[in-house]
Image 1 (tube, rainbow, N blue to C red):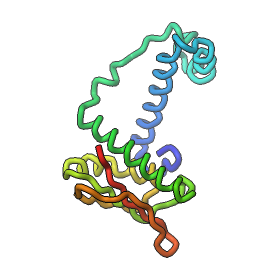
Image 2: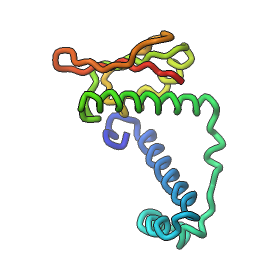
Image 3: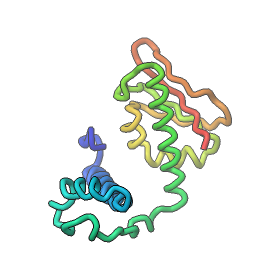
Image 4: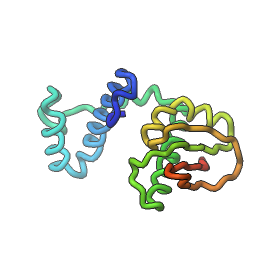
Length: 161
């Protein structure tokens, strides 16, 4: 989303930036007890100028934004992570750049509910995998692969979660 913001709605780009900002701050807060000097240095260069407290070690960890996370959203996130990881592995095995466009990506899932979850994040899948078109196939077993047809790459990914 951040690499091609013109392809997404402005509110989606803003939400992505906010999420990355919050995750970065949260990670610094979680690592602060173990790496106090490193995390403080990063905090000063990335977050202190935003008007937060003067030190990372005086910030309050806010887990309130985790409250809206449902089991369904967690499942969609896990499926998305597995899909992105598999596409990246397939591209790496072929010595392709992660930016290599896939003219078509077929996502194989075991249940219709999984395909519906992934359809709800289809734009994200396209952005992460560089897929131009995506289709979903409900099948129990399929071999993940990436193929070159003429001069264009296509992939089939079996999700196992």
